[in-house]
Amino acid sequence: MSPAFVLTGFVVGLLIGLTGVGGGSVMTPILVLLFGIRASTAIGTDLLFAAFTKAVGTAVHGANRTVAWPVVWRLGAGSVPGAALAILLLARLGVHGAAANRLSLLLLGAMLLFAAASLAVKPWVTHRGAGGLHRAPPAWMTIALGIVLGVTVTLSSVGAGALGTVALIYLYPRLSMREVVGSDIAHALLLTLVAGFGRLWLHGIDAPMLGALLAGSLPGVVIGSLFVKRAPERLLRLLLAAMLGLVGLRMLLELA
Image (spheres, rainbow, N blue to C red):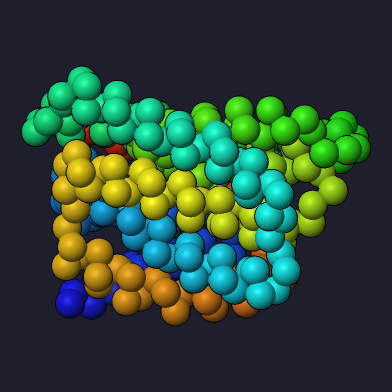
């Protein structure tokens, strides 16, 4: 069990517990750029990594009553079918080997840039949301958001945290930040389970690496979830946005 993978899992798990962000948007680029894992394999491995890690985060946030379960079920009603549709689309296209790796890099780079932009405008979204919707939105809006997240997360492993939290802030301004993070983590558990096993069927995963990552991430996400109230949210958000933007550009440059 590589200490480097265990340490990486711990750091990413800590980020997930604190912010809801860090699964696909941080772990997948680390696996591709630092460890040289093929993008298609990294995405599948990371999705299952996120599922197991966020199961622990969901338990902690659920015990702290920082999960808005009606919101989670509405998101899941869209994201689970969306993920299944994306898996079927990938299977239908029959993209494998080097072509699958290039497609994964392209989607991953584009989604990382989108995720960075989403985090950067988070304060504006929070302010706009607070002055906008004063009641819960129609159920179809949340289900539609779930469909979008289901497709994008399955294709790139990015979006459940970075894009999901921003969208929830705007749609549900009455939720506290802790409830936004907790609800996003709980929904990501449903989504990454479906997407992860779908990717396992399509391209396979690196099981020993997954075990090492989980050995570090499970205690990390517990610590992060317990200390979410004390997290310097603004600093973490800006650092994550800058990092995701740079990594997204690096991913796209790999294709040049």
